[in-house]
Image 1: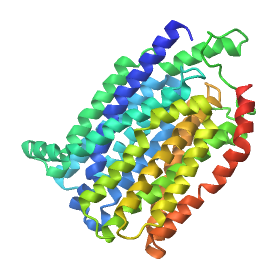
Image 2: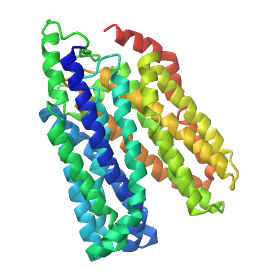
Image 3: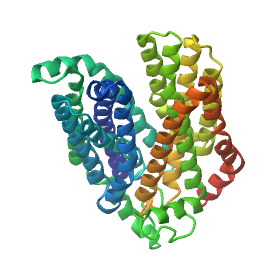
Amino acid sequence: MTPDARGLHRRTVASLVGSQIAGGIGTSSGIAVAALAAESLGGAELSGLGQTAAVLGSALAAVPLARLMSVRGRRPGLAAGYLVAATGAVVCIVAGQRGLFWPFLVGMLLVGTATAANLQARYAATDLASDRNRARSLSIVVGATTVGVIVGPNLIEPGATLAGRLGLPELFGPYVFALGAYLIATVIVTVRLRPDPLLTARAIAAPATAGADAPRGLARPQTAGRRGAATEPGARCGVLRLIAATPGARIGVVATAVAHSSMVAVMAMTPVHLLHGGAALSVVGLVVSMHIAGMYALSPLFGWLADSIGRGSVIAAGQLLIIAATVVTGTAPADGVGQVCLGLTLLGVGWSCCLVGGSTLLSESVEIGVRPAVQGVADLIMGLSAAGASALAGLVIGAWGYGVLNGLAGAMMAIPLLIVLLRGRVTLTAESAT
């Protein structure tokens, strides 16, 4: 990689880290009080809809943001995502002030767009990366989320104080912080993410596809199965056919979607399980914090491992960790807080391995021209599958209990694990020679 290319790549990653921290603070600030805010407006029976709306909003925003990035570049797409989320924070504030439940859900739906933007930011880190540091670049951006998810929930009390000064219900003060964080993220990507990494990568790739040599050190775009499988980057059916025809993309999508679904299903029901076992709210909060730390804090390590020993090896390790985690949590007694905490931490670590390895494999397996569309559909699949798993988790734990839920979550990993173990090495060898 030339000095100019290295400098541009470092600037891109640094800018994405900044926007990721700000976006993470905004999202975690709102999500931390979503259930309580929804309960204050609509009653206890509707309290879960606040977070559900945010998850659904993230899934629904994935493809439109990716389509915008395909046409205009990463900078406009990420900025649009954060601006829509800022609008959602305003809607939540107004709904809270006026005591309106359904407009609050609309606001949370829009707030979910920030999560979609944060997820897309990890892909932007790979646009100008070389084969040697692609996974590390992605993982650094993912790891930056750690700051946001730690700071955000701790803004609940300051948010309540701010709400009192502004004449708002105290549970809606954090949305003021979320609004400010989203606007900061918008400014960072608009001002700092120049030149646009995706458009620059396409410009570099153009002479390579025409037969000329690309600058040394920059990854050449890799052909993805049958050309023309995605004749229009925004056409979802074409993108799905492309993913199905490309082994690396297929493994990446399955690995991230199944790992995310297993993690969300178990995580969504763990606080309920712990509270029924007599755990205090502070203990539940500690378990959740350890889980979140496992999700993000070690991401740079897994990026380095993915670049060093291979994407498939990191994915397989993550899948094994998730299976082990479900065994640990699923066999824990009702009052076994320590065992559940260990299992939830392992679950977060396994998810991180699968996200870093799977997202990197997905990105490098398709051509730069269709990459944003493929990434958007992948995040849509990941979000919708997790939303479905979360909804079913409540039914499973109600009918059969927490142990069965963990058993099913672990069993979900068996097929993708076999795919990676049996075909991953062959696939990666073939694609590295492309």
